[in-house]
Length: 511
Image (cartoon, rainbow, N blue to C red):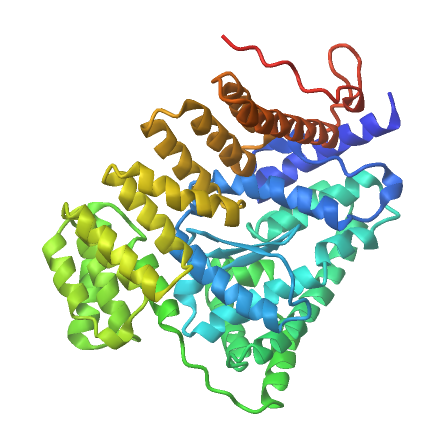
């Protein structure tokens, strides 16, 4: 058996028990992981990191816990961009996303992806506390800790290095990854990795602290939050917060960050309204059942009655969100009207429009979205919500005009192409519908699914210009299909040909 083939089988066997415990990806999907090459490669390149990260992220997007909420994502991106601009790599390309998970955790992934659990935002008592954790995770990314961990073990076998890389990746989203790594790797390698992990945690603390300070946040929030999590870990032992288990909070680490905070001049940071609104939305929508909605109504109603809120506008926003979920549209509209004008925010405008739409006033909702965009140009979730409202009103021509601009400026946003496909289908434009679905699947399901949609579009007719564009996309997508097959080690087809020998895409067979 060829050496590379034996190595790949060993990788699959080794990764199955690790990912079964540590990752949202099922063991059967291990075969779809990229092949990291011959053992002599030793170190993960940035390109390879990105391929692994993208593959892992595609799987996470299909997880029911993935929070596909443009408003919540926009806040995470805004917070992340502010920190990145103050960090050691101001141009760092990072994809931020949210998971609906009550556990207190955040995790950095290979290739520039940072996940934030909803539990972290709800547990943080200030925006600076939440920012301190995100800054720490960005420290792991800028210092390429996972790739450096693999590099440190470069004299080990390729299979062990791949296992270590994937175990570290999974550890950021599941604290049980350490147990899987111990089961799947040799003892001396585990001990070596634990040592590097401690060093990397301290390095991420230092980088994150500097970033937090330069971004204008309260640096005392970092040791304060770490100390509170450490106390919770001692109190609950095995049920300690996930962040304590996956990022061991040693006394030494906390003392180091505390000493750094005491050495700089104190700077008070006022929490943004967006931070409080995001927390209120997460709290209001945590449970969508009848009991959950009633609990949210009681929670925000009590806050307002007893004035125990951190932000009155956010408490009213949360109550209105719960009232909308309870289908009490009139009450939600009254609650939103009580928010002072000086507390203006696009999220409040968006909720006001949703209440209008739910009450049957689509024209009113569209007017609110247009007014909000005039005051806040470029806010993505307002743009997408306006398109959605236009589609609900049957105004697909207007929606497509807006989406044409979006498709040019935001090609990495799958929601744009999903909305395009909906309006194209509603107006009977079959070729454009499947072409848009091809772009959507390129970003979500992968190149094979995208190729099928482009081929369906090719069979729908069209003029020479449209057919030429589709032919180009089919060739480009086919190249991606071959590249991913090569990554998975599928070096031969039924005729014994290697991927490089099959450069031409399969012929399109129209019915």
